[in-house]
Length: 285
Image 1 (cartoon, one colour):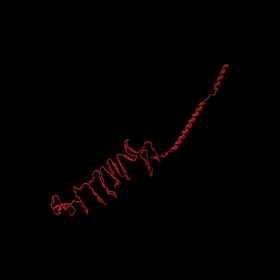
Image 2 (cartoon, helix red, strand yellow):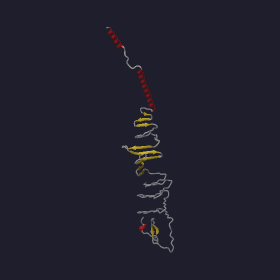
Image 3 (cartoon, rainbow, N blue to C red):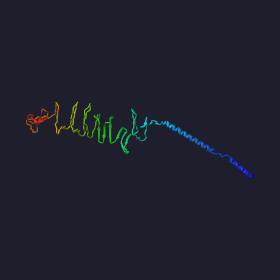
Image 4 (cartoon, rainbow, N blue to C red):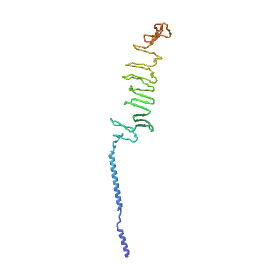
């Protein structure tokens, strides 16, 4: 009986003794240290994020000088692009100048809907090169001033002033060629000839000066179907050869007199008679 009572009392004492619950000792200290380290990292990251947002001027409207507007993006100041820029429209504010700068070349290139290379504009070192099938320059009213299509160059201007010397390998088609006010008009060909042709006629007019035809060889004036008119108060023919035959000279049958009608028509007369003309010669103009 005594033995059983002692066993029961020992069991009761062990059951009533409280047991520790949780993390204690070095484990608790390590956990607190890790939590403190995480809090420190979070605070540093938050501070760096706020600093970056402050430096880059992040806002609801954009970043720094880059603003988001309803129709696109607005950039104030200078910007550097390290890779290609794809845009639909680039413009400046009213009254401002657009400035593009590159360490090498500036190339503007367009592509088609099928991603094929179209026209391009290259601005390089002392050169400007445009690559396209058709090149046009228009004014503010939309009128074409210069058009280049394959082998045709069209100038949509009334007057073209060129201060230097122009060399044309092919033909030039124009309704009017005018000399400058302070100088003559010269058309020369160093190795070949100059040909002036017009379906409706060719007119050479000098309102304030002379027209001079100089040739090292012959000068031919020919009209295949019409007439040649020399209309002036004074007509001079200089350096004409004078024949001085003697009594023993031989006569030739192909020598004629040069005669003129009152209407200005020139004809040949018989060599041994005065100038006589029939009505069909001096009567027609």
